[in-house]
Amino acid sequence: MRRYLIAGNWKMNTTREEGTELAKAIAAGSSNATATVDVLICPPFPYLIPITEAVAGTQVQVGAQNCHFEASGAFTGETSLEMLTDVGASSVILGHSERRHVFGETDADINRKVLKTLEKGLQAVLCVGELLEEEESGLTKSVLDRQMDGGLKDVSAEAMANVVIAYEPVWAIGTGKTATPEQAESAHDHLRKWLESRYSADVANATRILYGGSVKPNNAEDLLSQPNVDGALVGGASLIPENFLPIIEAGVKVSS
Image (cartoon, rainbow, N blue to C red; front, side, top):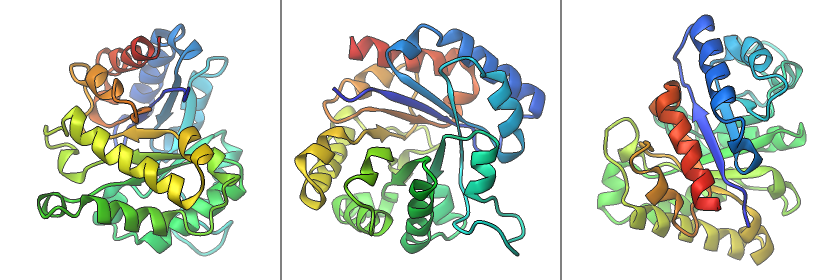
């Protein structure tokens, strides 16, 4: 059985003090849950060191929200995987819809980051998902296919052991709208079939596919109960322990 992963993407939020207290609250509140589910928090770059220190000795993992594919050089404002490894990050979120649609990252850009992340031994959380107009035009599956083809180009079956897929319908991020459990399951089922056709049944069955679109305490259990939903990539709700911890507990409940 695939182990649930509940990941919090803090985006560009918190101060150092707020982030440290948030991390400590999540670690304390999930201390029993982490025996059953994996918990990952991804703070802003400046706080990776204090957040890593805040959860030291716990099972809470710390990741980054992005990276650059070069090891070093004249890339003002960028952060390399060598730097992320140096400060204790274990995962990197790649291809988030905001990176694609706000900052213009292409599938080719994301693929370079995926390959370098895996080369450095970090877990790649590859985000895929469609815009509202694409969903309304019935293009969801073709968009997912394109993003998977591009993002996982040249990624071997062996390397897939360190890849997590996150399906995030863009129309359900920060809008208050959420895909129904049935819509989420349909997309996740399609992604798993893509993995089987591209790699093998073994890879498809082993790869975790998270749902990331306005996950909240009141819908987490229904979403996580779907056969092909293996966890959640949580945005706003991950900034409030009283919202994030119940999502983690939903993962525990569903997996028991």
